Length: 289
Image (cartoon, rainbow, N blue to C red):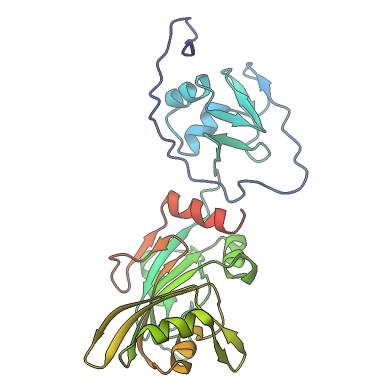
């Protein structure tokens, strides 16, 4: 295949391994009818903003590299590959993709992972003056940034908590129909064996109905205690603690280590970090956004 020509007619060998730095859009596949923007090529008085400027603002690349991406046919506007320079678009109406991934222009949306410490209330404020998530977040994010937590962890439970101002993503992550998996590491009283694994995977009967785990692993057994990894997609209150207690292994310590593909890793208690693009894209796909 002949490489795309520059505007002076000479071949331009774009770096094929260049990876877009853009943040993925919330809606990769928006529903409903979409009316494409009536773009115009060339002319300083044409409507809209030049495509390469939109790409640069979105963090895809510099304007010059954005022009190369357009020349290489890696940019799509409203379902059509763009190879001509000078196109003007309305970023609020047009759907722009680079290498098939829709570009997110709205930089006001924020996504964080907090390692919630034990004893901290899962609220943004507490009328009783107890330590809460809001106390930690208020010290670490920009003043005036309103965030809320996705789901809850009880005060005694530690670990991964997502924080965002993206209401739609938060609601979908919590909705049972999307079956977003969550992984916990539980320290329990008793020396666990294969019977516990079978019981949790087959399901135990709780006061609000049966519950079962998607995956169970005995990590360690030592001096009358065990560490058990449990993965499930249910979100009922205290579900992991209740399941293990019903199976005969009361929980001493519980840490959530993973939500879908987002992992706590080496993040220390109280530490806050931003989600990276790969994690965010994975969460969008998990809930059909």
